[in-house]
Length: 305
Image (cartoon, rainbow, N blue to C red; front, side, top):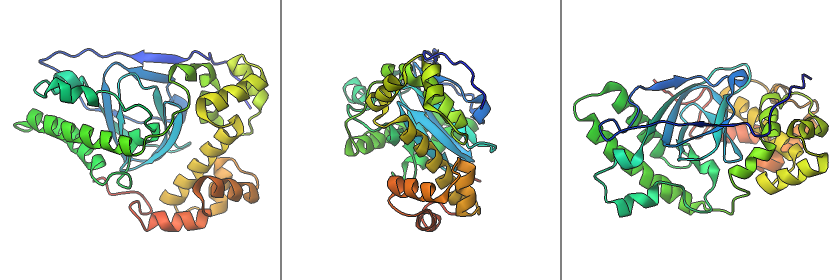
């Protein structure tokens, strides 16, 4: 396996500056986050929202890896460390929008708005990635915001303000309901970012703890301890999480067999795959596929046309 050096301080700010006259980026940004083009962990000084029109992959948000697929939306707040990547050898299409919330919602009472400018304390970063299973309206609201700006019909800015206020309010209610004790802080992720970055690119390959420790300039024992402190699990468990989520997305959105999904995700034995899948999802891959294909996300993804 190729072993390249990646700095453990790999994080980049993407800073944007808006004015009262132009409080958001009205040029819709379409991106295809291919695995080999996966950016480093980064953060913005403004609010970001996005909608996935096709494909599958994973979003890393404040240390939590969350799978996405067609019909998924995302809400990223100022300062949150994140990055996205498509499933290996596949394409996904996202549309992203950036906005300065105090400027966009300048007509809203500041005392009401201030509480919505950042996630609540103890929130789950996984709730920044949204599906209709989590909230039946939020993905549609975000898509509507993007399409209002894309079309720019008469009165679109007023419509965007109303939709955005509704989305923010619903999102905070969702995060309040799912509050949990978070592991570590965004800054603390930097120490192990090189290992997280490498695993997100090479999880289908054989990975050794010694490689990860070398990338982070840490001892193996320290790396294991840092993973526990920052992400709440070991490097090996994190690797299994990446692999199982990848296989789960394949089972949900393609007609591949269970054994093929396991092999493509990096497993050489089905017994290990079944054990890890049950540990993370609480059911067998076959049962999980049946339930999710018959639920909100049928095979092939949601209709985004």
